[in-house]
Each structure stands twice: as C-alpha cells, then as structure tokens.
Amino acid sequence: MDTVHLAALEAKHAGLEARLCNELQRPAPDAAMLASLKKQKLRLKDEMARA
Image 1 (cartoon, rainbow, N blue to C red):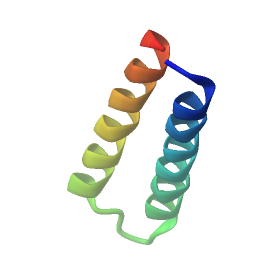
Image 2 (image 1 turned 60 degrees about the horizontal axis):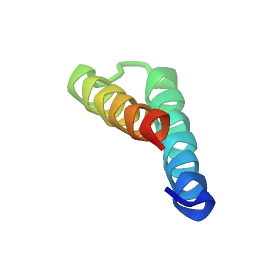
Image 3 (image 1 turned 180 degrees about the vertical axis):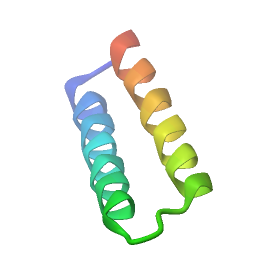
C-alpha cells in the first residue's frame, strides 16, 4: 500500500480514538458505542499492520 493510504488509515484511527475518549468521558458511556468504536479501531489497526 502506498503512504497516502496508510496516512488516511492512521487519521481514521486517530479520529476513532478521539471519539472513544469522548464517549468514555460521558457520565454514562454507551457500552454498545464503545464496543463498536473499539472494533473499528482494531480493524483499522489490522489493516495498517498489513500495509
């Protein structure tokens, strides 16, 4: 994969991390949302590792 694609994946990963942090700071974090964000982050991390 090219560096542009890898950079885009890293940007998406960072965005998901920010959303995850925001959700965790809520008084009552949504467990389903947290699980979804974590799964998305993991998929991106796996794709970055293959790059």
